[in-house]
Image 1: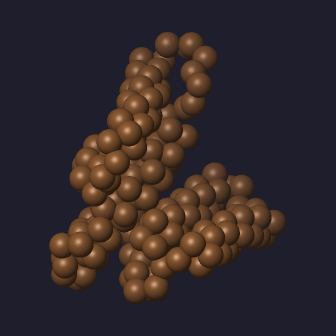
Image 2: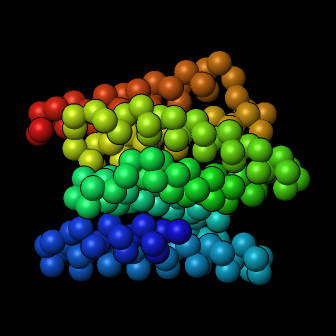
Length: 189
């Protein structure tokens, strides 16, 4: 999923040095991802930099950002119909949430239902902010923060660690990060 989102994102980047920098960053991300997959499945016992659960969360977070940016680029520059944009975004969110919640001890039907609910929540958030008069990077960052908040809260719930204090901490972090994103977008817009 990240390969597609990254490739489509690079299509809209016009600076040659930025394309090279993004290719190097993608290579490093894939290296960490493949290394954590190898150590997870073969259980080598070697100390890894990041566990597979954490790597998938950050790869999915980056995929949400790049995917939403690419979809908004299609909407703005190619006049892509916005309802199709929401359908594609829903399918991508569903796949990303499903891959994120694979490490929770649930059966496949519960995984699908949980992923559907989370994808609908994030799609509603995207549908609510897509028409805001701000830059596409700010909108994509806001959706990525929404993904991060939803996945953190649900993982804390299933791990039995969700308390009022944890929810307030995640909410404050998300609200402050959204405020910073939109405030800097307001200044630069």
